[in-house]
Amino acid sequence: MKKIFLFFSLAFVLLSCQKNGTATAEYPMFWTWMEDREGLDLDTLFVQMDEAGIDGLMLYVPDMERYQKAAALAKEHGVTLYAWIWTLNPRGDRKRLLEEHPEWFDVNREGKSLSETKAYVNSYKFLSAALPEVRDYVVENVRRVCEVDGIDGICLDYCRIVDCVLPISLSYNYNLRQDTEVFPEYDYGYHPAAVEAFMAEYGYDPRSVEDPTRDEKWCAFRERLISEVANLAAETAHSYGKKVCASPFATVKLASFMVAQNFAQWNLDLVFPMVYSDFYSMEPGFTYDATVQNKRDKNPKTTLFCGLGAELGGDFDSLVENMDAAFRGGAQGISLYTIAGLNTPDIRSQFKAYADSLRQIRKANKGTMPALEPVPYAPAGDISLDPLSHPRLMQVVERNIQRLIAGEPIHEKGMNGMVPDDPTRLYPELVLGEYELQRSTDRLLVYEVEEKASGKRLSVLFPIYGGLISGWDVRLAE
Image (cartoon, rainbow, N blue to C red; front, side):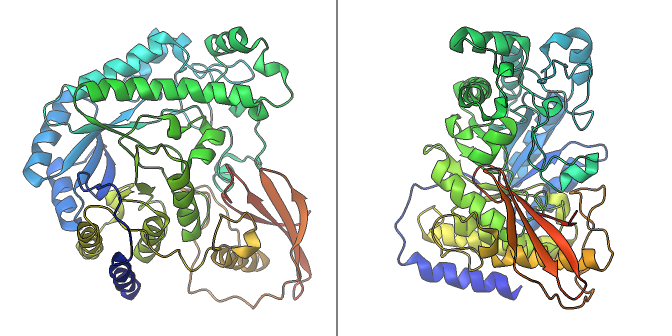
């Protein structure tokens, strides 16, 4: 816990020299997403939230009666409750829609509909944002939850298309070697209604260009369709006096490239970008860079929070490092996916101590988290796309070079596509030559390096998604 309290001391010192911003104290500072999975006991959930000092909840439940019970419990425990809405990827009535409205589902560049094909996983059944019927369906879902007494707001999730490309480590779960290349079968948004509307506006078929994912007009058009759905949902919720937030991909630019989300265009009260560093096989520098980028690019009327994957990998110290990185990058609060990652009373107690201390900082600064000193392990100034200038990132990479040279696999099918690292395991010291840049594009950097003690050459890859180093991979050179 030493590193946590060092951070608190630093922040209190900085309070005296920071300008006050717009107060954000109307929102809880610490949140969690939760699904109403089988076996979830709402009473236990709220008790655990009390223990952890978490007073904001984004909850998905399958019916309004369950929401009503959750809202009553939330009020008893002083918790702000937002309904977590699966916007364009229907959850509770997916089977019904597949049977009754297969024409609503999105279509890839090959012309195949999600009603009859699979993209990565069976649960990816996205609806087309181009269809008026789909928009009406989304608005009606928002109306239903907003009419539940005690719901304070809504959280828009899955307001997007299928991931055109996966984080590099996750691709191993599907036996893919994408390496930032967008394959037609994973490139969605080509529903006939969308293509027809685009052609009417711009005079050409987006499928006729060599790489539609680099066509600025087509990319902006897909973003606009998604943004229109998000803003219809927001307008509906606001008409009921509810707050509106969303859970988009990690940054404005990364989300734009990967899933056609430009959440800078969305009329949100607050936003929780899913900065799940473990999905990108990254260290806290990714959280920091992503938050800095979001602070710069977000809608200026939207309060920036940061979503972290508390049960996706790592330990409690790693979670604390990522929270510190988010606050130093400019986040006003945190949400965890999910509180289940705080799986013992002791960890929940430690988290509460952290949360309470940060609340004191915000309170002392008149309801706004102050700007803090940058993290010490990321380059100063603008976000650097030179991986060699990120010492913590290269530390992770070289640890995995050691594992690979030792004959150990570093990838497996699992939560984030990685074999967990045993930090107690010792390896021979590396004797590395110079990193030699072999390939450089706007989406990918590839280096080669020789490990001289073993005589092995390795390829080291760094995908660039939306102007941000968004992962790495190490392979024996071919």
